[in-house]
Image 1 (tube, rainbow over the protein chains, first blue to last red):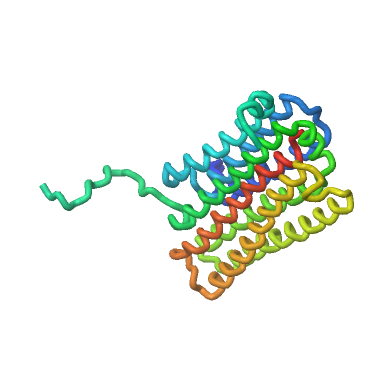
Image 2: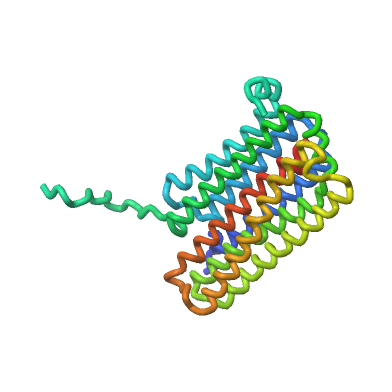
Length: 102
Length: 198
C-alpha cells in the first residue's frame, strides 16, 4: 500500500514560501519602477502589491492571523488604508490640494 | 449570584493571543502612527507639488532601494526562523538566524549610507526641493529605527545564548521580533512611495 503524501506544508515551508513571494513581489516592483509607463494601472498594481506584502507580514511573520482580533484588525486595516490613499491621491490630487494646506 | 466572579469564557473559545507583550504593541501602534503621519506629509506634499514628486523618484538610486527592501524582507524572514528555532528548543539555530537578521540590519545601514553619499554626489540634498526633503525626513527616521532595532536583536541574542530565553519563556524575543517586523512594514511602504510611484 502506498504511503499517502502529506500535502500539508510544515510551518517552516510556509514561511519559506512567503519569503519567496515577498522577494518576487519586490523584484516585480523594481521592474515596474524602471519599465512601467506611469498611469492608473501601475498605481493600482503597486497598491495591490503593497497590500499583499503587508498582509503576509502582518498575518504570518507577526503571527497576528490567529491573535487578538483588535491587534489583527488594526494592523490589517493599515494596509488597506495606505494603498487606498495611494490610489485616491493619484486620482484626485487637485481636490485634495484644494482641501488642504501645506 | 456571585457578584465578584468574572463571567466564564464560552466553552471552546480560544485564548486571545498577543505575540509579545501589550507594552511592545503599544509601542508598535505608536510607531505605526508616527510613520502614518510621515506618509500623510508625503501625500500632502505630493498633491501640492505634483511635478516635483513626479520627477523626484527618477533621480533616486532604485537599485539601492530595491536591495534594501530585499534585505529588510530577508531580515524579517530570519527573525521568524529564529523564533521557530527557539520554539523547537534549538538555541544555537535561533542565535544563528538572529545573527543573520543583525547582518541584514547592518548591511541596510551601510547601503543607506552609500546611497546618501551617492545622492550628495548627484546634488540631491535635503534642501534641493520638497521631494528630497520628504525623502530624507522619512528615510533617515527609518535608518535610525533599523539601527536601534539591530542593536536590540544583538541584546536578544545574548539572552538566548545565556539561556535566559527558553522554549517556554521568550517574551522578550517575541517583543523584538514583532518590533522588527514593524520596521520592515514601514520600509515596504516607504519603498513604493519614494522609489517606485511616479
